[in-house]
Length: 214
Length: 214
Image (tube, rainbow over all chains, first blue to last red; front, side, top):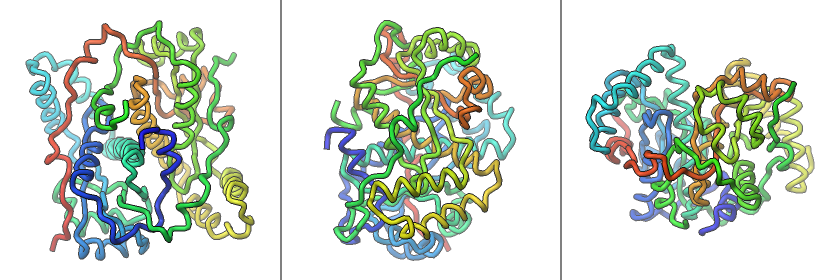
């Protein structure tokens, strides 16, 4: 599909995936790249994307996700995580990555680094966690939209036990905390929601013209 | 542009827009539709998108946005807002919109409605605000990715005074709170960042295989 509006109208939160249809490696590699390219505040990328395809692991995760069948039926289950180590080490690593990619001296990036450090210093630990979580939501939005162009079905999910997921997947030890799930795959012919009309408020309800008020 | 990866590599957080290039009405209408189609938890769409094009209003907003020139130079400035009225009235309105769109009886949707009401009841007011803000980040992600396909430049911004914006635009009276800015337009030839290499961590740093750990 090449028209973005057509693609966005085609997509829906897939309730039933076809368990027999798997995303092939070449397409999956594109989706990983789409996730990797997601924008984030300062470009800091405070996230990792954990991809689960192993049937046994999916079975373990099922009861931690309200037994929603997308978990086991999907082709690739992405557990979108925030990093729990948004600290000076990560910021230094990022600045080094900028310098290397753009052939810059580290000293040229000092001002930028101080700005990010200052931002992180001003926030409480909880506020940093919330900030990092929000960045993961950007990645979710980009990935869903881009998948629709590749005609890959997705189902964004907030309803699961992050603590349970973190435990089963050993995420804490990796300095990660699960934020969102994105099962990816192909819709089943039996999913009645695939044919249901998309529900959105009218344009005039959600798009407003902004003018200064007195 | 039709290739999503090409488009995502083309995009960058535009630091300098060409103030003389405006997005034409037909394209802008598509972007509004892209925002409107954004996915959200329960499909509840707890957002509105306030579009500022008036030069005088943009000038007023500039000092509330660290004087970043994107505010005044962009073609359309979108102030992405969360609704502050995520309550039973909104949930009822949404359920009515589902029933109308899908030709269903309201009674068929009772279970779904109770589920959303129960979710909202369990959250503190602050947690609802955070939840609604996160939905706005999904819309941001979708809109940035989709704009890149239309070759429309954007610059997602968290750095501004939400209170100041809310006041200038009279958002509180509309039951809205500003969360994010998305200036949209066309990059200036003079923006050095337009030619800078994109900085992202390596794939193996951000994509992990998830397996149950013992």
